[in-house]
Length: 344
Image 1 (cartoon, rainbow, N blue to C red):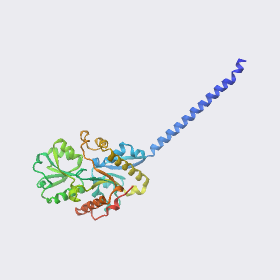
Image 2 (image 1 turned 135 degrees about the vertical axis):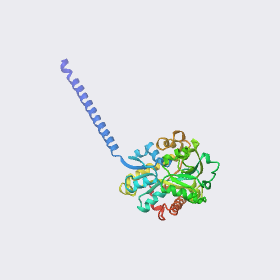
Image 3 (image 1 turned 90 degrees about the horizontal axis):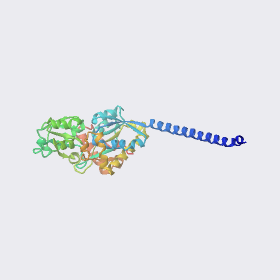
């Protein structure tokens, strides 16, 4: 009797065990499926080849990576380190890169004349006497003699590489009364600027950040004047000099419009973060650019803007700068800058 009466209980236990086992199996299958979908989603992230000039002007790119903004938008940037404008231009023209972060404006416009629309700017970076980037520096030993740009007469100077930087430096010196031949000036890779000044190879030059801040911190050079494009080219120290920015190739925009749009959204989110949290954003300069850890808090920031937010005045400044590029022979012909801006 006992044996007979125990069968329903055993059946109930077996049924419970079977149901529990099925639930475990189903849960496992669901988890495995979700895991597989997650892996697949990661594998399907849209890769974008990005040419990167590792200076403070490229900060939005590094912020977008470090804060996960590109990842959130299913973008996987492939960073290709390119020092200066010419290699970035070459990369865009040959489709070896789809995005340049960042591209010197006059060199981008020069490329646009040669191959219309090859460099479409989605964001640009303003520099003034406050938002410092390009600036003239002099060796500390000559600081007492060189008080202004006209005092560079007879000195041996260096400049950031590329025809835009070289000819802009010459153009600004000309506006200060110095003719070619009254000084010497040579292009030098940005990675060598600090050491060249430390060795006394040059008396001064036209350099970029963070090199200028590094030189001053080391006591080997002093800034003679910053915001020189705003003052001498645009005629107003407070004018936005958009000398560089983030540019997409036209092929990237045309062939992968959704990916291009999402990349721009990630960049815009980074720009917004920098504006709201400048002190925190600075820390991303340390490991991504040539900025030493102890200088992160003192390197000047730039006025980062998406071109879709430009005011009429800012468009006017950009056009005036482009016209200057034509005057100094960097941009072969007069261009309408609005044709090479892509707003998102």
